[in-house]
Length: 325
Image 1: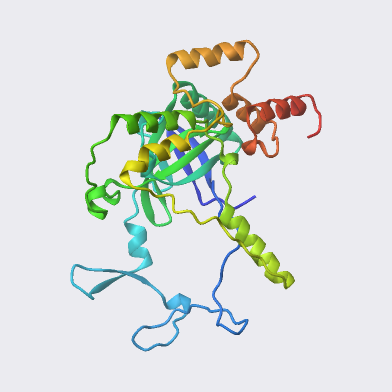
Image 2: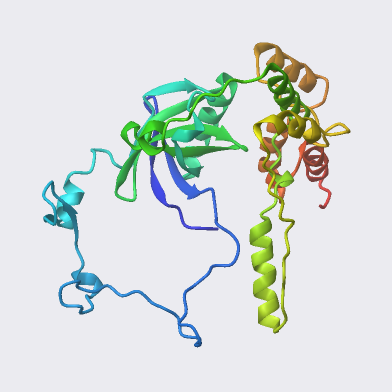
């Protein structure tokens, strides 16, 4: 278990729910450090006074911010920062509920899992989860986390509630702010039809197991090889892949798969008809992946987040009958 990054109260109307937030992500793979060439000496960074060059003790370090004048700063004492925190900085109050998927992924910053803080919080926690899941809504609030305030979305995910922090409107850049305007090109009907056909042919349902961190894997192999005193080499195919404007149609045609794409059909947007079909599927004994994930979470099935629907069904069946994985 890991330590929570935030402990506080989530307000569902006038119902308080004590929660703890845990980071939902973890960077994996070798961590590259800096060394002085020709030695095994690590490069370390010290806190130094830029004027005197002398090291400064941690307890003597305070924070400050630049004013509107160049090279002019003001020092901010810890108690001054504490004083301006929003009232109820340990409380997230959901002021409104948005349709699921209403917020564009561009706005998402970080995501955390939310757990009940104590036994008394379990019932209202499960009640909120069920209400959001059934109405396909997400709760919108704000949270103070690591000395910053963020908009946050509370939503059901994998049998637990998640809290996703968002960027503020003035922090999200418009394309024109960071890049030159994109020139408009006249699209040929033939090329456009081929492009649409390629997209349809390669359409698939999202499965994270279909993707591989090939660079991370090769970096790990390189580190292990050097630790053994052996060598590791990688020679990728070097193809340009670019062609003239007249070659776009032929390149698209050659890109079309000769057999059905292995990942299956494209995902179908959830509509009232889809929801009714899933409900009918459930009534006929075939549960959806969301329901299986929730049941697997209740049964504490290991590795459930990496399973597809059929694997989840089998694992839940074994766990429910007392079998071993």
